[in-house]
Length: 113
Length: 215
Image 1 (cartoon, rainbow over the protein chains, first blue to last red):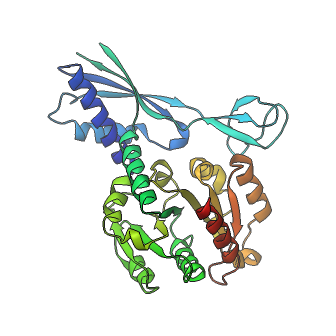
Image 2 (image 1 turned 45 degrees about the vertical axis):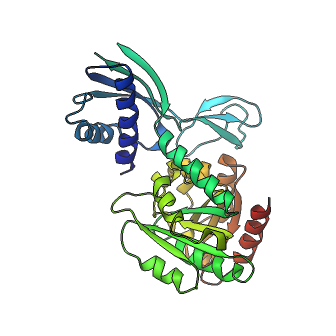
């Protein structure tokens, strides 16, 4: 459900950028989303289609780059992708880890004509 | 033509959250955002906190729910100022709603503002409100595997309250394993074992909260 709020904020950013660039049409929106945010791409596209009606971004396609959750071991500094139900360091087996990727949520770029 | 944007999608919310924080600090109000799944005991926890601190801390409450004012009415019986926010379907509170609520609270007469977020372990983790502390309540019947299932929430919070510890003898829940998992993914989180039914653990939480309010 939070996709509506997220899509609305994203749409505001996109419209402002398109206006600044004096774009006639926004064709594509490139997003970077961390898998830990739980944002569902299909929902974002669904709300975007609704929100962009009658605007320069009508018909724009959302492209998602999903960032897998990554951690760094606090003990040996090894970085690794988090696996489900096992967050231990694969190298030194320490369980003390810090999340370093997977929480991203930003508009990387837009494609305009 | 491609235009580089590199803008945080939640930047607008962050901006308002920053304004909320300024307003709170101007009025010397310490603000706690309480998050949990539905039924974990958020309202009971708010009530227990009020009962333990009433007398030496002036408390205000913001209640967030999709609909109804049941929680606000319950809290108001404790004689503290309370504002109910109905999100009308949205599954979390956003900074702009808190901004409106702050305008309807006597901030000069409040030392501690407790915000009870909408019951949900996903979306509230994304939206900063301007609070000083984020607290998560997990309860024993929910199971000890929740940190793995809702990692963003569990890694975001400053404090974790394990509620309903009075049910530990009846439920398959490994409290030590749970605590260890949480500590591994969020070393900064302070953990409290509490029962809002018996009141166990609430004074320890209240003591910690008071230290945080002073720092």
